[in-house]
Image (cartoon, rainbow, N blue to C red; front, top):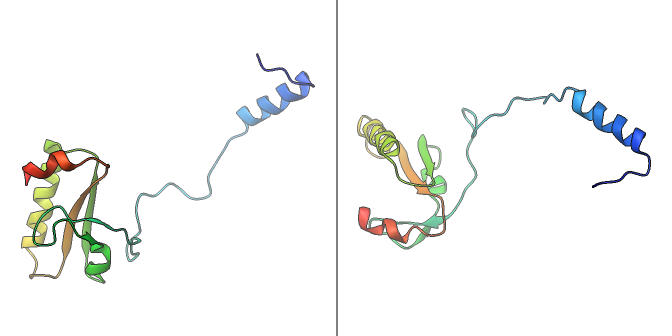
Amino acid sequence: MIRFANAPAAAAILTAALITPSTAKDPCVSGPGVGQRPGPYSFLVASGPERGQQTCYVCETADKPGIIVFARSLSEPLGQLLSKCDGALAERPKDSMRAWMTILGEKTVALDGLG
C-alpha cells in the first residue's frame, strides 16, 4: 500500500491529473513527411554480391524516390506488399527508384534459406 504524508492533497492532485484533458499540439505522424528524408541506418546486406557487408541504402538512394519496408517477421500480407513494391520499380526507368525491406531483429539467420 502506498501512503502519502498528506493524503487529501495527494488525492486532489491525482483527481485533477485524471480529469484534466491531455491534448498534444501536433497529431502523431508515422515516418518522414513528403519531401523529407529519413535518417541513415546501416545494416548487413542479406542477398546479392554485397551479402554480409554493412551498407546504408538511404545514403545510396540519395535524392531518388525510395520505399523502405520494416518488418519483424515474414507473412503473406508482407509478401503481397513487397510484390507491389517490385511492380512499382518495374514500371519506372532502371535505377530511378529504390525499394528494400529490413527485417528487424537480432536473429534473422533462419531466414537465409528463403531467398
